[in-house]
Image (cartoon, rainbow, N blue to C red; front, side):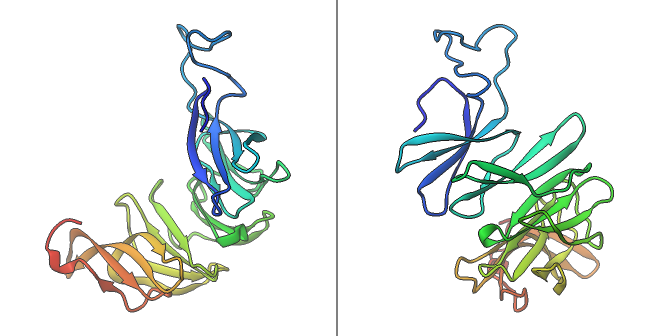
Length: 258
């Protein structure tokens, strides 16, 4: 799809399949092929671990660079024309959240221009709102709309760094909050689109990695079972109503690690 000497990484399809977003170092280094003219390959040159945002349109077969921001993580489509991404300053341990329109080629910053370390952003369908983890002090969860206006924030639920995950319902009216990577301190939490809590934390199991079904009828998550006085540490698959109630353990009878 991209046959050139540059380093291309993190491909992501648009919802309609018309476009492919990816990160590339081609603007900084056009080729790492040793025999190419002006190749970057050589002693002391390390391959790039990030790059700029590019979009390939399969109808026009054109590749377009979107903005000048340097990305160090994968982009995420929030609609057929909008791509969200995070830029990070590793030296300062801060990051910024951006939303790009691939048709106009413009980008706007959604997070505030302050010292935030943004992790695990979860975008509502269509890109209307985003919830992310602020991993530096003051730690907490922050919700903003697509223009960057603050909708809500809370320090009531604090998750470990790289230990937070959220999923929006298909209608964008609810969001499920949980942990990930085995760092799951709470039961399942479901909130409205303004971050006001509907249910939770439900204590039938410590919850990880929530996911709504495409039709919005079900909410699935991984649950670490609890017993009176201790956790047995076994991971199981749960399915619940969209608001988190009525959870059923689908793998509880298998008696093994899932």
